[in-house]
Image 1 (cartoon, one colour):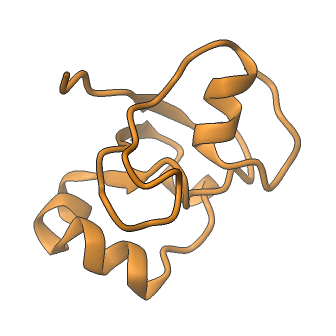
Image 2 (cartoon, rainbow, N blue to C red; image 1 turned 180 degrees about the vertical axis):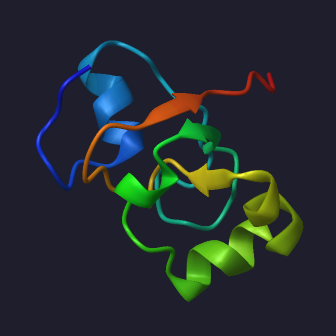
Length: 84
């Protein structure tokens, strides 16, 4: 999907009818909206300390980002895990 620069991954998914699970409404507090960045991690906004805190260092090292916080700056490919 093509979206405007600065659009969150969560919002980009919504634009094409894909709902990403989230319990906090996109407020960076629950981590249920995490996605696995497969390609283009450098084309996402820089991770803020609160996102790192919610995800934890292990998840960050594995390539996860919170879809509500990661803003698209270029071509990115993500996998949306199914938890529920």
